[in-house]
Image 1 (cartoon, rainbow, N blue to C red):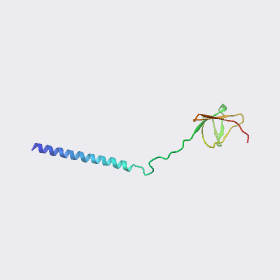
Image 2 (cartoon, rainbow, N blue to C red):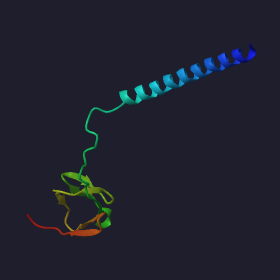
Image 3 (spheres, rainbow, N blue to C red):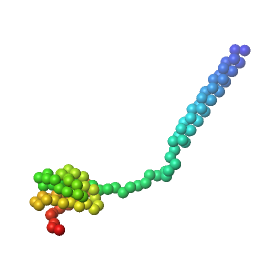
Image 4 (cartoon, rainbow, N blue to C red):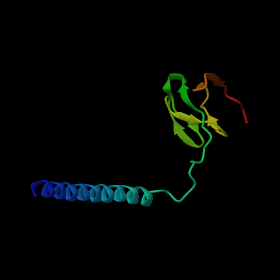
Length: 107
């Protein structure tokens, strides 16, 4: 009689553990499926933008795209208007290891 009771106890414990494992797996699966994105699976690739660091003679301010800028300012690539006062030069060092030296031009 005692062996039968032990087998019944083990069967109930096994059934309870199996039910718990099924419940846990279902919860994890449900959480992951609800958190899935509905958009495209691959992110859009954006082109990298090259930036440069501005250095001016004597750390004097100059104008970049109608805004005042000093040495150490980050300059984006593309169409950029740089204006310097008389006697002040500027250098932009791009992170692609190219150096552009700017000279004053008359309009």
